[in-house]
Amino acid sequence: MNNKEETTPSWHSTGSNYFESTDQPLPKAQPNNPDAKTILKHLGLFLVTFACVALAGASFVGFTPSLFPLALPTMTDFWRGALFATLLLGFLGVHEFGHYFASVYHKIRVSLPYFIPVPFGIGTLGAVISIRQKINDSYKMFDVGVAGPLAGFVVSIGVLLFGFATLPDPSYILNFEGHEAVKDFVQANGIFPDQPLGDAPKGSTMIIGNTLLYSFLAQFFQNVPPMWEMYHYPFLFAGWLGLFFTALNLTPVGQLDGGHILYSLIGYKKHRVVARIFFGILITLAGIQAIPSIHIGLGEWDTASGSLSLLIWAGVLFFLLRRAFNNDHKWIAPVLISSLAIAIGYLYVIVGSIETPGSLIWVVWSFFIAYAVGVEHPPVRYERPLDPTRKTLGWTSMVIFLLCISPNPIYLI
Image (cartoon, rainbow, N blue to C red; front, side, top):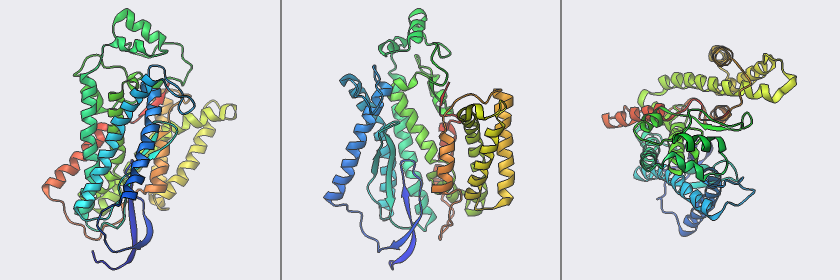
């Protein structure tokens, strides 16, 4: 690439590792040598994020959970939360530095990771690096895109396997406040129950969605807790989150890591079709979550069959698809009809109810992709076939996506 100044998109990689395009002048290439002030700024953000994740994590893995950020945990719970923060931010850091060092290797101007603290959820929205020039070579784009997910995947697998290998017996659950029905069952039987117990209000029991890889690994170990108790175990929860975030990053659309990888494997035209089909699958999962949530939110304003909820979601879906497919109605109409038909069939025929509360993860992710990331990957100036090693790594990353993604990652019953 020449060194003259030109207006080109710059790419930004986040903890969810999307690449967002913004038009700005591209200065001449400069070495990646951050000064002390820059390093301190990034370190400060990391420390604030660590504190937020430790406090939030204490509410999940602590023995006496408190509502973050309204109450401080006990010191024992805080240290357990700090362990969780170390594991989760270790994954995020390795993931982002995978992108960083791949960029440095290819002499691409890039920032250090910015960690993003938030006072809710798990205490962070992830981490972000800023790639400060357009990458016009498919080899370089592939290397930068694949390095983060593969590096983070290795860390997450290690954390998860250590968690499985060091599991205490089921009586460990007796340390936690609440869970009285489960405690009674464990004391009487020495094992976890097959289903959640107790008289908790509907929609208040959180269940972590299983994945192919997690369930495969779990069968080789004893005392594995059920998915509605798993988040009390810092190594299991941090490992699961690491694998799931890796899968989100590997979503094969737009300028996500998976979009870069699949584009490099199959080229612009084929990727455009695959990305649109995959987005159709994503909005179908979103509809399965959204329709019950809209129905419950409307209350008496909706009919028992949920017709108003369906109408509202159909309208939202139309505008979402217009944005995602750039007003291409040859795609909008069939994808909208297919998505609605499958969501309705699943809710009304298979589940038999639209009054089951759940998360809105795929709804948020659908809007995020349509409005922030984009479904289609922009063409690369120098598009070259990948060598056998890169092809192997690329298709391996697509398999990792399938093994680590969950159709219903976090939901309430």
